Length: 192
Image 1 (cartoon, rainbow, N blue to C red):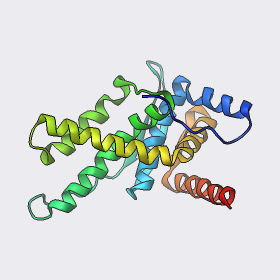
Image 2 (tube, helix red, strand yellow):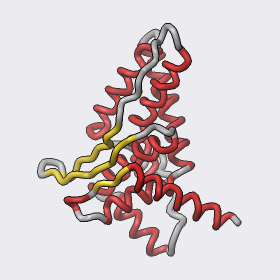
Image 3 (cartoon, rainbow, N blue to C red):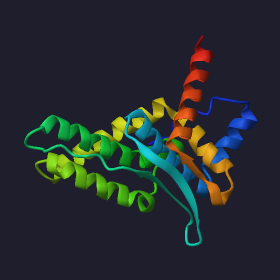
């Protein structure tokens, strides 16, 4: 898969500097976590905060802290169960999707637990392993499209995280939504 990130804002030098910053080891972690975060925002799925933490072993780790959705009974409310399961899966797949948009691939090590969790959420909806794999792949492409369409939001959240001191790289849901509103307002203004 070819990288398709949109670095159209700013001068040529600014675009190159942004791409270099986001493609660094810590930058890719920031993009991964920003992908999860923007999926939460776009799917109206609440979270508390997104954070990057320095790590001696691998340089940097990150996570989005959120409340697990209350799953409706699958037999009584099958459509609602499917919707909540798909939303949960898409927020988990969004980290890998964001990496893929930026670099053309994703880290299998960094995404393995996300994919394992996705399988747990989707297994009750699939009849066999092949169906599960196809379902996961379909949701991945839906997530990829959602983030590609809103790439500037992902990049701006990642940039904001990276601009903070290493020991304080945390953004609340309120701050992330403020960034998203700002990006949307800029897009509307430039379209007018």
